[in-house]
Image (tube, rainbow, N blue to C red):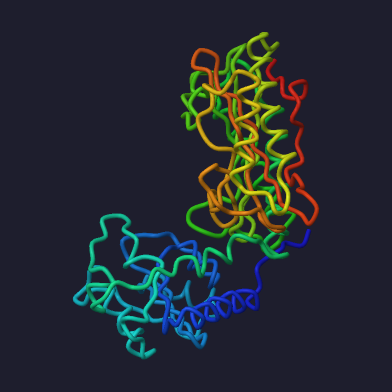
Length: 394
């Protein structure tokens, strides 16, 4: 099958859009340090380490990517920026941030008209270094939103990548669900399913490869038992038992873009208490999806589910907001949260995942990837949501 991807022309257009925003804001340059933003603007996906990496964009659209020597060939082959500037190592005889300042000087950047998404490199793995403001003499203009405002609404190519990610996630989840058996550990059930689906991706999509970090390309897993009562529970390997609640997660990486598919499954015949909690969770998710449409405040999606939770008597069992945007990162802004002032627009993509968590019973959470359309929304993850399709085990 053909594999969608982000073209070099789209990366060029993204940088041109940022440059236009810089001109409107009166900036000479913009320094971008956050890895996902660098990838969004260049196509250069990397594993963040202690070695600083920075993208510098000038107001006329010129661009320079500053990378360590370990990333030289990778950067030169995967981006269309005007210049890839190499420094040898961190901390080095000369701190790598001096290379960033060197690019600013070449672009005739005035300190008071220098913007950045962060005041220097975002610390990883023991990094220590001067802030950008220490080197240029003034605090850079906070210009994070020049990039983030572009990332919120996905392009046609981005939506194609996310949709294919959803499709592969569903395939992996079906295989995993069919392999669940009592007496086996969680890992024994889900690891073969993920690996077999990965092999299918390689066979069916020649030239495909995961982008970004150490991602293998496909995820299919689940947490079982009492651990599910915590939204971020851990796999314990205790062995699947009748009556367990299982909360799963499946996703695929298509040119760096991700999706999210989660389901609550029950091992064997559900108890009346499990049925009530499951149906409450499903009603909350359905309400959220019903509300989502262009022009709706993001906060209203959560408030609508909270009002229903009050009617259902499960308000005390909520532990998080309804969802978040997703794309190059598993979590992106905006959020389906009462504190977010974003307005939903066509092309925005969200996870929708209100959960009901009961300490002595377990956690109940579905997550679907949903795109805002011109007249409402569309669920991109095609997978059953009803309890009758999610009873597992043998």
